[in-house]
Length: 217
Image (cartoon, rainbow, N blue to C red; front, side, top):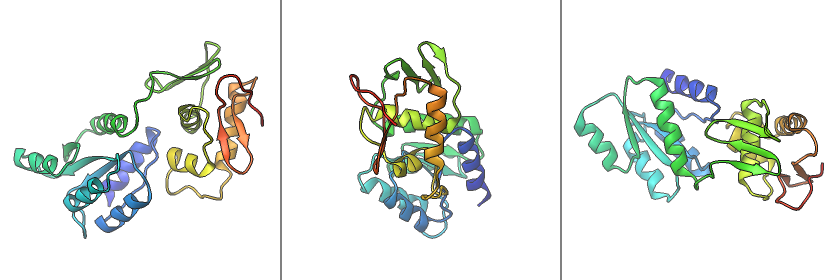
């Protein structure tokens, strides 16, 4: 569907990992396999309707937030969509910057509150401003490098597997056997400089150690 593909391309340009489903059944299957922060859901899906899929997502108990899209801007339609449990409602056509802003707002509500700044030693990441500093100096990172560092810092010393990084930072089109994560971590380490703050935990993944421990390759 052209609209779904256009939305996916636009959200990916904003640094988001996006999966696409073109009908209700495949959307339901994906939502049972992957925990999404936000689902942008067209009410007019073929097969299983958007209304029914919304109910299924909400009944699963997941923290996923649902934004409904519809061709009608009528009050009754908005009320009906929100009554189903949708968290937000947007009528087509819409301004893409508004969609992005709403998706970001819903994503913040779908995950535990993130502190204003994420930090480890002298590395500081600001999720809102999308900036990283080390020792006060700005570090220029790509979107994927930023995403990897954000996930690792938010884990607070826990190990994050390559598979989880692929799911959180990339999307379903990423090859699970690719070296993308390893290469991205390598370039991230180079940009952050010494002393290193990212551990490789052989056979498990990566972590940014908590205070008092040292990072090792």
